[in-house]
Length: 140
Image 1 (cartoon, rainbow, N blue to C red):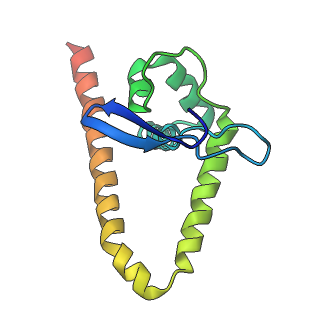
Image 2: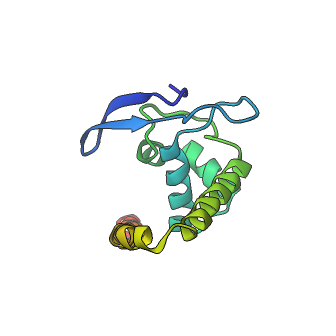
């Protein structure tokens, strides 16, 4: 559902509640799920791909689609590659707005931001280990 409603689903780690869509863009086109866009950014970073390459590989890789929250394999591009750049720009705008937040609020957010950075580093290390395990498995 792309109307910004809550959807209950079963994930790898149990049941979750997520909000998808987040409304309609100014042009009237439904927005893509935040999980999809964040996972595309992560996969782009983890594998060192361009925006175009990550959407093409996503369409070919069922594991990437599952990671992105898809329930079924879809042999189509998840979005236009330019949408990844737009999403990245929106994230930058949010980050710049956070810099305008009062210091006491930023101090309260700091532990959460540090945890998020540790999780990002851990995810990066896990991706590296997974790639090396795949390379070792194919060499046998």
